[in-house]
Image: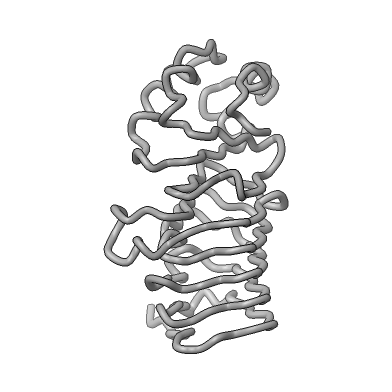
Length: 208
């Protein structure tokens, strides 16, 4: 398939609504572009969205109309005061220099995911205290690496405890927050969201 290439670079874009919905297009975000007070409507897969180092989004809204899966390239972008709506799964945000060259410019601050559904999404190397996470049935583990011993010692329903013990050490050391969608997590280990909630209610570093 021959893709049409759409470039955003070397300018500041303000107060615009951008519809990134053409599945036959590749959308390139350059290193010298700033989006300010814009609404970006996303209805393409992650492979259609390509961020260069230092792309800046300030006070923007992302309306994710098609579930965005496994899009780690957010760590190349600087996100400040942005809002996210829609479903995101396996996405990473923040500061993760070891991810790839250029990722040292990534950051996330004062962003709002309260209207999003996050599944297995991570905040990397940034302060989660500035971020609004989605409420239940999503739940967010703060400092999952530092609190790993406590998480492993909890009695989780079914095989979920074993999964947590196996998976937590595999996350990078600078993982600051980890958000799951309870129905998906429950289905994976053949339990119920209610049984998961009964456990996380006892743990003060889990936000739900």
